[in-house]
Image 1 (cartoon, rainbow, N blue to C red):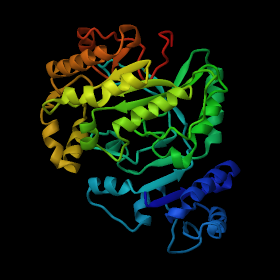
Image 2 (cartoon, helix red, strand yellow; image 1 turned 135 degrees about the vertical axis):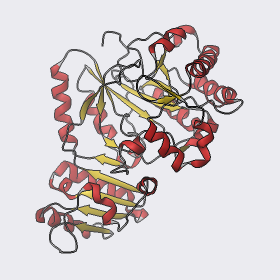
Image 3 (tube, rainbow, N blue to C red; image 1 turned 90 degrees about the vertical axis):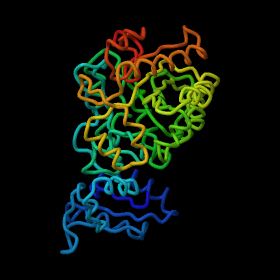
Length: 401
């Protein structure tokens, strides 16, 4: 992260402005470049007043002919960079963090694709994109226009939505904050998740799910003695796969240590082993010795969700282009399933799932183990003896959700 870009409109709201200043104070010693985008002369005036506190900042917007009004989608033009290749935009986007004002809803509903075992769930959009660079990640194509991490700081709008959602139903609702970004990847700097946690805990029928490949949990509040309605879910793989495919992420050992820290703080724990990448000899030994054994020794997940590599065709082409040295790992994906994704064959997926389930059963007692499959063929789940139920990573633990 070399450049910080922020919408100057955030400075017009006292609470959002304080968040901006807190973040800038946290990074000022690193001498990061800070750019404010102003949409009006008033926003420009307010942003320029911060020059005394943060002399490394610049302001773009009305007031000077060479600084036109700039939309978020033209962030790269501010940096005087033009790209003909999407892969280069994505690569450079990892060096930017954008602090924005979310005008759309913070809380939306995910509708699953047809033909897979999945249920609708609620997304909590604290940001979009990710500073990590996992070679298989769908976000690199989802946010190809704005391929840089975005964090939304006008949380008061979210707080209004939380109250309205809680009052709209008596059912338990899990708010998944890990669908469009990794909510903890930058939060040790941004520190908005603790605010969100305290607000969610005001409403007995709301739960918060934090899905992460980081180990950034030490700044999270201690919830010991409070209702257990905040869930930390770690995405795990083998150490070899982490080194090959998940660039910039915390190590597997660090993630499991983070789960243990969060569990001791009163957080509920879930785990995703997804995608299970089994393209090299001895892959299962790596999962067992490098992850599953350590996991079972330290934490007790309430659910473990399993998944396999799955690509829409454009994403698969992009992944091969960005990481040509990894093409061999995806060459066996030759089956288009009902959701129009490209996967391994049914037999190969069954074999990989079966092996991981065997390993989990070696280390967890049957009564401790709740396994589900993510976005899979229901027939495959049935063949494996994994019930297609509402007990998976993104949903409340109760089947009465």
